Length: 206
Image: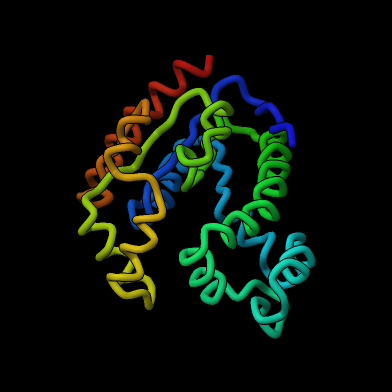
């Protein structure tokens, strides 16, 4: 399927491993006026109760992967896709075209001076790199990633590290990035980094 061209001449692909703080950073950019298009939120909407992707997910994976209210059973699907590359590919075949269409539609009504696409697997996907003007990686230590995810979920350290292992390595992500934000500190350390990049992105978007 042809990937729609972004509607903005300048856009940023924001990425990072699980627990790196992508949402926190994107919220700070939003406060400064950037338009944020979060592919995770789109994916959740598609796979929520009666979401647009649910009929295809039900047909492909069966009722065991659907909750009683008609949403994706995320815990069961997470277990499956992190143990089977083939199952992950089947799920991506359903979700990715729909996510691409939804992001393209959102870009057409973007009101900010530039668009930030939040894409956890931006670098891994390959195609997304061609859609954006710059790649921004949110970085922190692997121990910080594990601690953050465990604090917000019921996942064990082993489960978190399994998810991390399925993503591109920290070194690979940094090597592919045009810009990097260090998120080993708190929000007070994030804000000046975001403000500096915002000014840079404003200049590039003119």
